[in-house]
Amino acid sequence: MNQPLSVMEAEKGVVVVSEATCEEVIDRASSFTAVESVFAAMARGDAYNFPVVREAIGHADALYGFKSGFDRAGMSLGVKSGGYWPGNVNLGIPNHQSTVFLFDPDTGRLKAMVGGNYLTAVRTAASSAVSINHLARKDAKVLGMVGAGHQSKFQLRAAADQRDFEKVVAWNPHPEMLPGLKAVADELGLPFESVEREELCAQADVIITITSAFEALLMKEWIKPGTHIACMGTDTKGKQEVDTALVESATLFTDEIVQSITIGENQHAIESGAISESDITPIGDVINGKHPGRSHADEITLFDGTGVGLQDLAVASVAVDLALEKDQAQHVSL
Image (cartoon, rainbow, N blue to C red; front, side, top):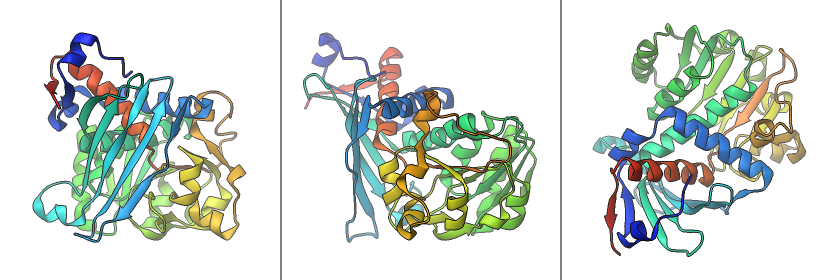
């Protein structure tokens, strides 16, 4: 991952990998491996994220920010710059816009510029997939999807790689968006049913929440024993997808504890005193074998996927390596 550029390659200039090329060279398997590896590196102390900058810019209702970090194991150094423009949907372009900049950790020179929109989608889906792989029951048969936006389709495909699901049940606050998710289920050969939230929880063995909600959508009393929940939408202060009582009752895992308790799903339970920081385990500890993960069949596990900069850097680094290998990268001189 993120191999040093040869002198000859560096002399060609900065590597540019387009959105289209990212879609060609990065698949679900490569993004899963990159994200799992960087979570493991974070837990070992070999990689760390820098403080996140995220601000409302006072124009176009946009949120803009930077996520950055350094992975000593993978030698990835860089920053993802981007944010959320809600009006983009009316322009026919994704609301989320981002670009990843990678630097040579030995010299500080700009190494690559990589389109970040597709990579953000696949790395977010890979994150929940890693949690399902390590925490969900092996006999999980029903997948519940809460949310039906652009990201939900990536989530569904990635989740289907991890367990032999037999059915998908889904709910979205705007039901007219569900046919798009059903089309993905049809593509995967999975029966699809639109249900209310309480029924979704009664059926699902694995639930993925991927919304922009600022209130609890799922309640503790609805969740059946043995469920694994991946909360993937809460990445900003004030956002919330599940009941605080549910968080308090579950065994908690996350990508990064600092983000989880400040901008992630666990922020509300922390603020209320329902849980403490020590109640949350980095998923990397499970990957590295330091924590057993699920301890019994009836345990409710919850993964708080806040989205860390190192995920972006890891997947972007793989995209650069593969684009160069396949002669699909461009070079520019600055």
